[in-house]
Image 1 (cartoon, rainbow over the protein chains, first blue to last red):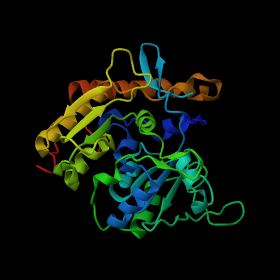
Image 2 (image 1 turned 135 degrees about the vertical axis):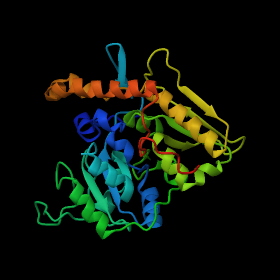
Image 3 (image 1 turned 30 degrees about the vertical axis):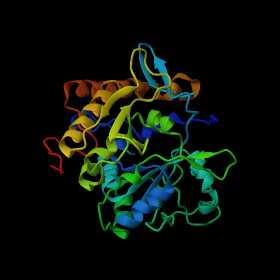
Image 4 (image 1 turned 60 degrees about the vertical axis):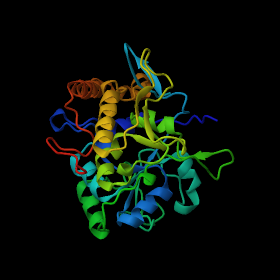
Length: 78
Length: 259
């Protein structure tokens, strides 16, 4: 069942803004090795000795991932 | 914060990243004593213990919340934590990235957030691995080069080995197909090239940064940077079309480490 939660896109924009053109980096957040669950993260941490970095986020229900802006389309926020 | 090279670079090299969705946060509420808020951050030791940053909470306990409600996550903060917990290996395993679907402690709840939701949120293509997992995907060097291009998932375990790359379906731009590529090759060089081609194809039409907040009164203060955000995203698209856009973790002129 889709679960609607409050989406705080301003944090997404602050935290994941596209990098300057000179670096050719897609976006900062994409550089990180993100894993899906705490269990997987702890397994990776045990194997590699690396500490964990957790970032809280929330989403609208998964039927609303896109919306439209003029003639283009964007990830959705409702 | 994450757009700063000294932050995202250090996180990529020395930390395990975990996007902690609300459902998962609620599932682990007793472990941490709270649900991590949107935009808030935490650091855990490799054993899973929260790392305090030195400031106190309102009730005098050591705070473990970083970000807007706590200590800013900066290069020096990451350096200090990494120095206290130096890594012993850069090993990567595919199973650490395969997107699962698990029951949470809330009745009817599932975690993490659904596959399509995270792919839409992160604006990334989905790569579903069917059949026997190619040996290349068990090579840390290969994963270092390709793991960050996709949200990975496991498909049918029987049948021929193939990787299906697709876009999120819901609300997709008119005329754009969900399917991007179906890759049958298992040889590292061919598989790598095919994954790169699929990723570039996605990036040519990657959705722009989420905009809804900009359009309502609460987000109006962001409108001055909205144009900048869109222009940067369009620049990335044009580089993808030109074939010059680098995948995450790569430097200009660098060759795949597994060849």
